[in-house]
Length: 536
Image (tube, rainbow, N blue to C red; front, top):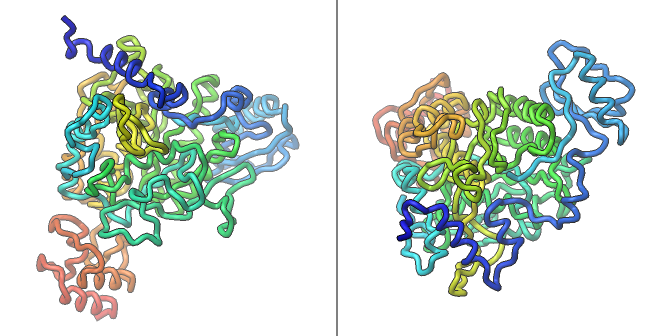
């Protein structure tokens, strides 16, 4: 007798082989279903080198002279001693060896291409499925395991907490998201404030630097890559609109940044520029489902990661947490020292890490002792999709799909950080990271799951009461540690009802607005704040 509880992974493999081999699905789509990646023609993938010709990225040692040899044709300062250097095409390896031998650099790397590694009423959250495929598209199993509903009782995010998604692309046409119902643009007039939005225009980064022409189409991060649209949908799909999915942090705006070039490549330098842009433009969380390729030598992989770590340190100095997917190699990554990046591996919906030895099909997540920081579900994560999906009965399920990959584990964790900062914006990145680590569920070897699988309810609840190094100032509504007229404007909006009022009295948001400490937010708080601003 076939016991499905003992042969679950084999059942899943068999189901997907049968269920997806129907006329409405092609092999390319099946591949994207299992291992999310930008869909490119095979000739572009085959012809692209592992790194961008004529470019190196270096990180100077402290107090080293800036002078570079004549073999470096030009250089561009990125941040913190990190420089993008242009050299003659074909001389990359020779120049790299010479720079390393000089002893003046912590990192010398080629510019390698990275790989895109409440109780809601939304249809695919917990509505009884009407087909086998719909069964796998339900969000409730992993939402229940993570404790999402209990966390949503506390917060579903705040509109001043921005999540930056650095990815391949987000829009099919300029200014036009795939799902008008799921994405609120600044000019949109959707009811209520529950829905997430894109903080436009965003940016895209190319070989010649940031594209800043805001009057033309190219300033918007649109393309036909779709991967960024899929990953960001995990966070900002609208909740409680009776259709589709429930985003995990649906009130938090998304800052979309396209790092992919027109040929489908994602150079490391583009990603570093994008990280700086996100940090400089108010992001509290940066999500990246991109990783240095496992096809390049280990020392080059480590150099790539070191450069990302250096720029992540800059982001952390701007109060931003960087979350990165571990990748889908299915192997151990011997990478260490990434103290400024939260690396996320993928488990099944019950929080169990599956190795390739256990199941070739489901054991896709990269791992590694000293590499992975946390884990989150990464199998059958239902999110926004760029085209209609049909079940085995031929019924349209809409533009949603259940997709596998660490690309979908990372935005779950990024959403957790967004909820933490939403309930307690005074937290520093290190304080938020500590809350996530200590409240994680560790039931497997740390080389697979790091500190464990993230848990939403205890982590978000702990954030309410945590008081760290940044002081609470009554009347400091925007939490910039000073009292200004901007705080007065925000408090007036809260009192007159044009801005949503905080409801949890123990939270720093409530206490900041409760200027006179009487546990009520009203016009008396406005009067006292005016007196404080006048110095009386």
